[in-house]
Length: 300
Image (cartoon, rainbow, N blue to C red; front, side, top):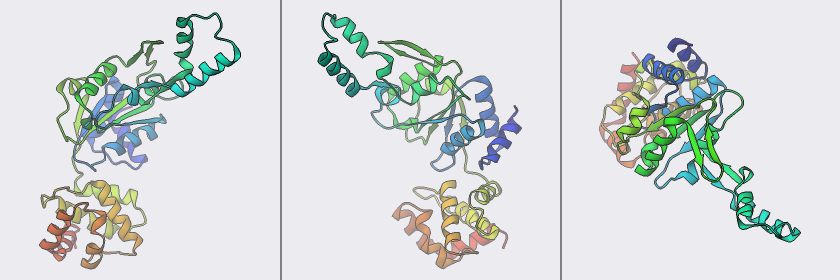
């Protein structure tokens, strides 16, 4: 395996990575280190984890972070309903007679009642290729959860007090993403390999769109990519990402548009701009100017 082969494998899954990103993925896999991806929303961070899983054949296990997430949602929990049913069944059949409280508790906290959440599923994976653990938008979680992740990812093990320690026989490929809604702590970043994911240049974005929306004319794909590049230069509240470029191209292709024009652009702005203020800004600057920039960028 090499950075070039990783890049080819990702391309086979429809993900066009630049040399730096392919190298980061290669090193994360070879060194067994988590890969921290930061960048604007929509640049393809989550899609990269999906492409890695598809290219390696490993299961994609996704943990979506949010404010207040804790170990019971991310690592493991107990199936309290099944425990209660087991206890009632034991009482009904007389299996509880003569037993100590400790023996009953030990039976209730057996592994069969353990609910494996994303992190434990990835660490306790035993068969097949190593899974890909996607810890998405880690910047939305709080400090305590970050500290817990740091402990888990340092040794790839989880301690369940009632059962024992689960250690990864083969470490999962771990991808953490952040949109930088807040700074992730340095300690967690130091544990990871780091890569800032930029918006692709025009040529690479056209290639991405061509692969994801093959039904669109090449002229349309080129013009839309050039138009999105122009939008990103306008300092909008929410600059469009690659996902919006793909959505816009797919919408126009579905409408039968072969070349971007003012009417089709204005009618479909909602597929690429997600805030009213951004739409008003673009309209006030002139849709004709946007179309002219698209055609100029496309070399027409």
